[in-house]
Image (cartoon, rainbow, N blue to C red):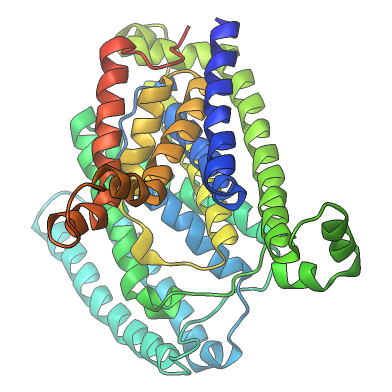
Length: 432
């Protein structure tokens, strides 16, 4: 088994080497970095599904919350926007929380009956209008200040590493709220509920400009201690290094930056693998798999199934949120339009299925392999199609096939998934 696993990882590594040789090392390293981040997301999903059998389709929401955390923590603050409506906005949010708390207290303290129903309805309706009055005024005041370059509260200007931790915590907090309400549902209803909540999260990010500029995007987010290419191209030590190896300074600087990201992300991935393996083979991990395989038997042995499900649901979401924050830091911008269920939910599920659910190494292998396939077909598809249609006359069908070649990745992904499910239904590295 160990030899087979080694050969599988070596084969995937060879794919990246061939990409560097045949295309460019910049492309290869860029795909590899995204593959490492995808492997971290797959680890988080594997915790939920492979450990506990929880079928969540709200992965995109956790990724988006991780990206939002980078804006709220690492971007530069906007003092004018904050002065225009920041305090009033916080007051309106506090009012909203107080209204919900008052409705809950009324529901708990009052006896069942018409008076209780009218009281709760009155609290919620009046509280909603009061909340919207203060909130709308505050958000409008914030969004009208320098909308071309800001229009939002901005962040705290803290290092990206802190934003990564906050991203994991924000995703975990959202998972706690979702879990308290949705984990009691049957698996198919849980999938529908988590997908809907993820879409709501994304809709809020797109429409609330005061939060993170909505669809206008937040750019120039700081890097996590990684140098900028322009600075390297002006540094004497780097110019001397590039000259000694006979490389172009511009190309060498981009490759160097990607290598630094690879080391940083690789260290996080290895740490998560080590922690996941320790957890999986501990008494806690055996308990989680026992609950997954037979909830009734585990409940009969005194295990609190819902509490354990909530626990693993939160842990998995935190890992996905961490990866989402790391991805936003690498890209240097938050683009809510890029978050789609296809890329950040169902593609991650394909990684777990192809790699092998319940096996951490399988999830990592699936993450690296599927990320390579997803991105390489987009880059190499038009080139391959141009050779395949060489005999056709220019224009018409030939142009259409070449322009549509990038979409072949959907077909390629489907074929890979079917082949794996046919010949290795438990994944390339199945659970022991």
